[in-house]
Image 1 (tube, rainbow, N blue to C red):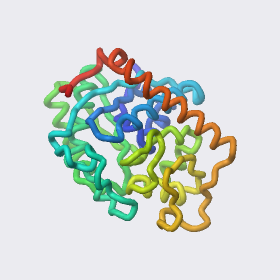
Image 2: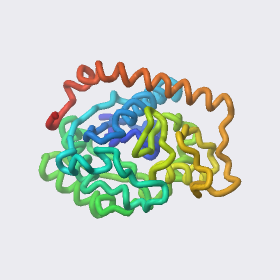
Image 3: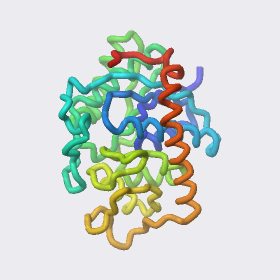
Image 4: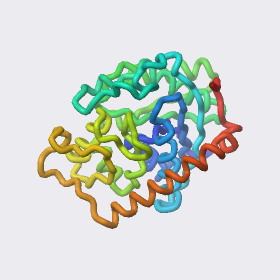
Length: 275
């Protein structure tokens, strides 16, 4: 039996690096959960492009992306910023302003059912050291694994391999991965980062601290916003920027194709209520 692990993939930087890291030595099964949040279309398109790049450019073997559904619009309320896109936490807001109640509980519960169906023994999340939320603690992950194992009759261990790392350390680990094909933005403009939300600020600051050139295209610049330390390298070479632009263009084209094919591709895997 191969050493299999399910990775809860958001399309963000942290889970992308986790995918690339684990795929070098294990059989990785990525899962994306659609919740009806406003940034998901961009996330999913870039995640699909990232996985293609892992297979084609990195030579890694990754199982097909499984898409599950768990709409939360009614749970959070239609006026919540994550659903409506209004009053999105700005660049200077605290990280705690991004809190979505019970998000990890919801996502991991659904992913655990998927693990049980495929008899996958481990579920990996890309939680980092500075995550302040109650559903991101080691105690929560241990308890969830025990509860899921008991409820599903299949032993599942829930792990967070990056739990002791800061985001800049994750970036350094993934510097050879196609990080331009990741999204850390609460208010994307197409497939581009808005550059004005808390998530964009966190991403820019982490790249600045890491010393790794930031390949991200931001609609708004960080000038005067205090995202990055002065003098920290962020410029991209022409070749890197051109490659990132081409990849995003392919991903944008894939959004349209994905709308037509997503139902067929995920039909046998989809679970959960539909709108």
